Image (cartoon, one colour):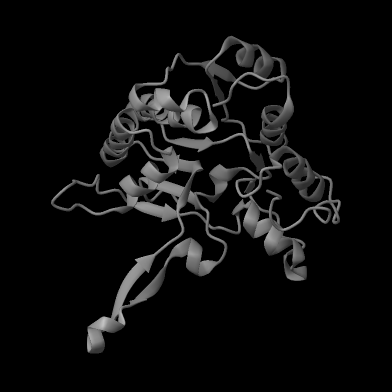
Length: 267
């Protein structure tokens, strides 16, 4: 899903999808200008009329406001029986992602984690000295799924999950990624009923976030021949420059293409 533009990140994303040889790809547009633009690039494009609803109107046409629309769009496809892989446009596709899905869960999503523990979960111990002998309480922690790249199977649990997200975003001026994670992860309790969703974390070295790439992978000589399936430039605000550098590194094989960038972003 993307707003109109005269190139930039949207075109870079589309060209990466085409170069990766992904035949079953489509851009969902919410305006006529984007339809014309994407058609010119030779990509399948479908326009859907979607408006900001309820509390999301307060966010306006910001990144978070527009991003929240995608769950109503996704529900249309899932209800018709289609499995869908959603991607934001700040993603570079390097290989066909459909060859790297397990399809055994309702949701498969990329992680914002940066190592095995943060991506796949770890046992975190809370220390309360006032409890003496029982001072240590264990909790399970996992860095969140990223709602900018995930795969949905057309199941009843998936539909219920999407309905919960849509309902909350209409009532709350909330970040869609936070709602996505809360509704997929929190169990049923006296105050809520979960959609009983089966979840899978995608391999964080294949479906890579930009923290993993720029802080770790680019400095690891043993990873020089490794080609991710995708790189999501979610941890950096100079998104387009880094996207183009990722293409130079992995498509054009310029080994030094990433060297000019710092690990993090400048405030």
